[in-house]
Image (cartoon, rainbow, N blue to C red; front, top):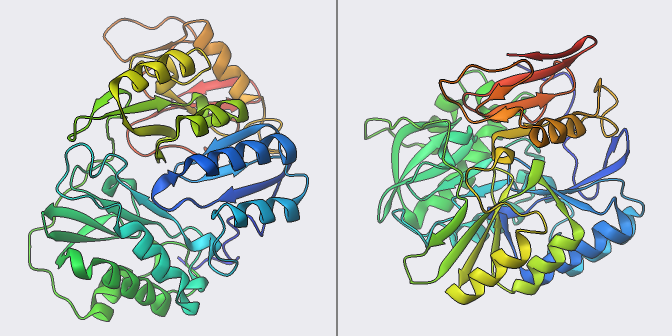
Length: 384
């Protein structure tokens, strides 16, 4: 499939003109946001945006209703959140959030800055579409199932499976060679693309990339699942410290909450499931964080109905939406119409299990895997 229009993914330097105003997308490779950066983001959301920070399905961040794009650029550059003007939209790198702390074959987080630096150092790679996704999976299978374009999946302490177009290619590479091979694969994508946004859209794209690399499959390909259990609540790290997995209602984090996250002064990872993982906490500090931030809206209860729902932007953010989807979701959760999957019969208007609410037939933001669609129509919502 050849795209007739160039990729128009927004960034910080090229905003998306949403129905409610300009939208900026901030790439956060590997999802890691430092405490000082949370403070900068909180201030920018309050002073330049609508007062919220949105979490995306690629572990990136968005600000809506941006009133001064130049000032936002200046602040993000000073905070280290915009290290490149030429490559800002291609820095889409998702990594296993718990790597190096809980389970997994290897801590893949040190590969994130190396891959990011390699992308930014190569002028040609600035031509990658903003939709291309790099994935780094520590072997637990949480991000390899997200359908990335180019990635690695740990199969041992010093060996990765090379992932192309969301599937194991059968090629095995060492940790030392992983970044160079992923960068070479990106060059292979560009060499064979004729306007496609994703590797799976390129005719014989995977074969072409493998030929470009000059490598051969040597193992039976692994199968990756499309659904992974969200890390929520108390997480005992392998080093004796504590991590906290926190859900964020519909992926929208109020600026005030971001300020409190900054005050925790620990590394925090934005996950591709629109949640957060606060890491490296002593037990007493972890308990205090839960006591303070749970009443403010962070979700530490894995049984919360909010963890079952996702939604598109809806009105007023999207002109194509038929309704205020997010407001409707909130009402459904508050009234108990969002329920866990189970054998009990559903009453009228109830929806069970994972579900995605959409304001039109495009189903923007729909997560991968088995999800019930709740779609707005001129006559009301259609379920399924």
